[in-house]
Image (cartoon, rainbow, N blue to C red; front, side):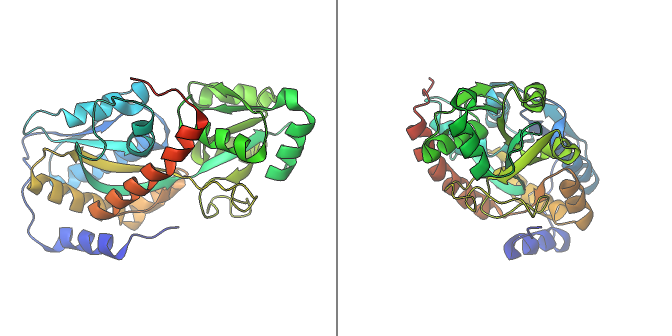
Length: 321
């Protein structure tokens, strides 16, 4: 399990040891989760809301503002009224991938937000139907070359990280893969389980249960290092596919928020995320607790933004207005 950085730990201790700027107790803290209720991201947003309520002595609520791949929720936090205490619990794609896909996001990923802390990463996993005998990336490639009419992959949606990773997978291997996008993993699973879609990629946390029951088989993960949940499963890089990508979630607030609000909230989030009980709950949901300072999150965001640029451009995916 990845540990908090030294700077993040010290920042967490500072939150406990030093007098902190006051956050208004009579105004609720709104945590915007820009996706539908349910799933690990929503659960972890609510976990932090409970802890912030206790630590700040004020109401902290989670508001689900789903739509447009998370952009509606991000725009709501960016445009928060002066003095409104609003926080965005964002996925990496809103800050590192979507800026490459839309000429106008409705926000500037770097200028309109103050980064607070990344709190977890989520592995992306490549799976095949349990009905197939495929047990490795090399076997998948050989099977698809022998069955080109079945060279199909599914993803949770067009324009998502799994979509682009699989597209890159096809270019690297020379496979003429056809994409079947779904509206999320729950919608895709019946076809994957039945073998109608032989290859599927999504967050590991969404696939672990079916993998453990044998309905699907995870044959690789996409991050640089092996997943602690599947330590015997090779990464794509180990399988000869030069792809390194992982999802993550982080807290941001509007760049127009007061310095005192940003500092206090960042310190509290770091302190909550460094708590062993909180970290254990995050891990139990299929995610890796991490933790960064504001500056560390800013650098991670920039590095991932630059990594996705060439992948999106080489895909030929249409850029929307």
